[in-house]
Image (cartoon, rainbow, N blue to C red; front, side, top):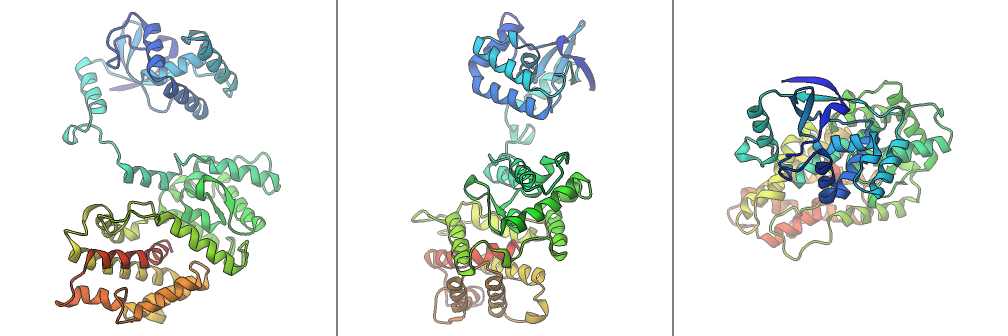
Length: 434
C-alpha cells in the first residue's frame, strides 16, 4: 500500500464500477452517477467546494500510465466536473458546476492524493469490507442513531446550523473582533456542539435557530474571548476534543468571571424559570401512552464526560436494554443508583460536599434542588415537587426507592417506575450536566 499524488487528468472514473456494472467509457460512468444520485452528487460537490478538496483518498489501480478508481468514483467525478464543467452530462449540471468553479478560492486542485494498490485481490478485499455490510464484524459497521447522536454532540457536525458563522457575523457586527481575525470555525462548532455548552456562554440553538438566553452584550463578550483564544491558538483542538476537556475550558473561563451568570438573564427570574421549565419538558414529551423502557428514546442532551462512564452505562441499560414488563426489579434498583450517582456528581462539582458529606440521599437530593433553584436551573414549582420526595406515604419518594432495594414486601410496578422517572428526570439531567 502506498499513497501518491496523482494528476486528476490521469484518474479514470471506473466504467466497470460495481454500482452499475460495465459501461462504455468514463463519460457514461459519470452520467450514470448523476442519473442515479443527482441530488447526492450535487451535495457532495458542494461539500468538496466548502472543504477545499477531497478528504478521503480514492483507492486506485495503476493501468499503464493511468489509474483506475475502485473506491472514490463519486467524489473524483465531482472534482473532475468542478475542474471541467463542460464534461457534466446536462446543461443544467454544467451551469451548476461552473458556479462551483467560480466560487472556488484559488485554483481547483490538479492533483489528488490516492491510495495505490497493485494487487486486484487486495482491492476486492478492501471493497468487500467497506461496502458489503458488517459481515459479522469483519466489515465496516454502520452507526446506529445513538452513535450518530454521540458524534454530533462531540463535533457539532450535522446539526443543520453553522453556529460558527452565526457567531462570527454577530461578533463583527458588534465590532468585538478584528475583521481580519480568522476564527477556526470547525473548532468553534466543536466546542459549542451541545446545548449544555452553548447555554453556558449565553446562547441556544433550541429548535434549530440561534438566539441569546443571556444579555446579548455579555454573551458576545464571552464569545469574543473564546474566538480570540481559538484564533490565537491559546486553545487548540486537542484541548476541546471531548466533553471533559470542553467543560474544563469553560470552567476556567467561568472562574475568571468571563461567562454570563444568572444575573445576566434576559427576562426576570420568574419568567426565565418558566421558560427554562418549558424548554426542558419539550424534550421529554409528548410521550407514548405506554413505554416499553423506563427512559424515553429522546435525546436529553447530556454531555457524557469520561467521569460519567458508570452513569452513562446505567442510563443506556434503562433507555435501550431493560424492558419494564420483564425487568421491573432490576430497573427499580438501577433507577435509584442512577439518581444517587447523578446527585453525587452535582454535589462534587458544585462544591457542596462539606455541607452534605455522609448525609442520606434525601438530604443530598434537596441540597441539589435548592442549589439548582438558586441558579435558576429549575423553577419554584419543580423545587416543591422535589421537596415532597421526603413524603414517606407517597409512591414517588426516596423512601419508595430505598424500599425497592431493601424491602422484600414492596414490589415495583411499571406504572410506578414511569411516574418516578418522569418526576426526577429533569433533576437527573441537570445534575449530570453540572
